[in-house]
Image (cartoon, rainbow, N blue to C red; front, side):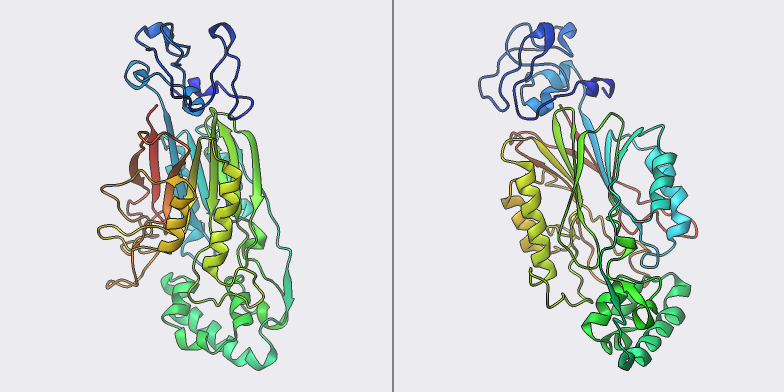
Length: 410
């Protein structure tokens, strides 16, 4: 199946020549007929009609109706937020090698990773999984905004008190800085002004930079944290940045077997960080909505597109709470279809010790990691499975998110 994905389309959405089999038709045509009943036709055009029996028919939309049973194949996709946010998610250093082991053993053909922030972690993962995923794409973005004395002298006592609270009450227990600010050190956090909070959010590993130095205003040295891994070459891979605060975000797109892949990590609703007054989107939710518009335009109206990533938005279901539900509804309105309609489980879960350190829980569990289809026929559905949810000695879990895998059947 995977070797068949080496059949590529040079121009997306257009008819392509196919050697002795003749030219392909237009994408999405409704007059397909024929069969793959002769096993020798697998990988070729049907000899009894105008439909196709190769894996490139996924992108062209011209598969014969019996291809799934006669010529087994498909594309396995995965999205995984690795949670390698040093200073924000516990045990980042200790989790790198277990994450490499998990990814290397994945059956996925294409994987979208988020929150691989540091160059060292990205290099360790790409090198460590190269036998499984020899093709990778990552765009190294940079911090381009800094602020002198973001927490001015009048706030220094409150800043030092906040720093001490985090160091004493949270860091030794592996509690993240954001959870600490929202809970254990809530009073100390509330004493700081909005610009200081914004700076601290970008400098969780070195908060005192915001007091007496020139502090970067984007976390993780301005890296965007995205990595796409693939068993076969990524055609026309590129990165498009979003306009954001605190964290650099964007979308990687690439062509795989005639399909368009979008790998992204959208803005979270940062409840403990006030949205900057100078921001033109008005809120974290507004920033999120603007990112969706970029991806919608990029995908186009006819390209068969698969969006993978942590969207920081999702619907409610049994045992799962909604996250930015209006924004998630907008994702559906933009043409991205969620085919996981029964048996859904959370991907950001309160039973994960990297999310919540308290036995009674800290908040809602949500399903914010997604694999969505755009411009596919309505009868095309994915088969889903969660992964990376096993307990890991000492560190608890591989990440603060659980991974999601899906199979495009034909």
